[in-house]
Length: 243
Image (cartoon, rainbow, N blue to C red; front, side, top):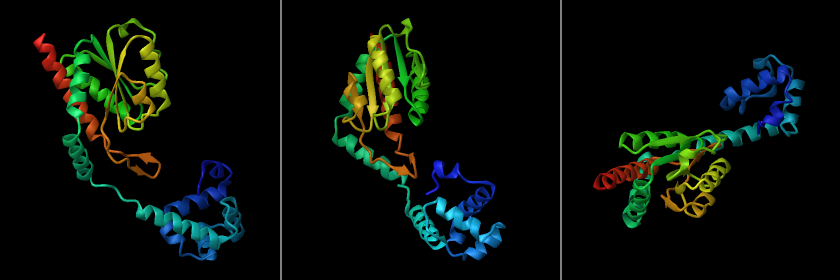
């Protein structure tokens, strides 16, 4: 309703009106136009002009759209974290996750270094993964800058662990292509094996949990990723000590 394009057209009075409305939606949906004008110290004509900019023919239609927006927000509910955890654990027990983890650990144990890549929340987990692997004596670093230049010799005999919930982030895909060209083996951890990142990886570890969004943010649980990363790191440590 309040798109960036529309907001950019507001004048000073309309901005004042916008700020009041967004902070008092639950009150405005029950107000008369004269009440809103009094509360915001603007004229009714300013309010009507504000409504037209939002593609509403009048104040009544504006309140209807505002009520729909309010109802949508109230219906938005978050899954309990334990539901996501139970979902992941159930699928882990039924699936072959351990075999994927073992395969990935075998590859990493023969590599001189591990490079973690990811954007957004996956970038934060990439940093965590690099720290965790390094703590278990496997030299690792992370890249979460989408424009990081990948042209150096430290990629010799390296393994890249790419993290992506959707597996469709264009920066992560670009990094994978660059790293593959430099000879790095690619292991990806994604929420599905039917995505671009999974398809261009040497090994893909899918964890399959229900994707969850809150407004425009993807808040799909990252618990499976932490579990997978820590499991791989511990197995790599054991394999390395046997050599």
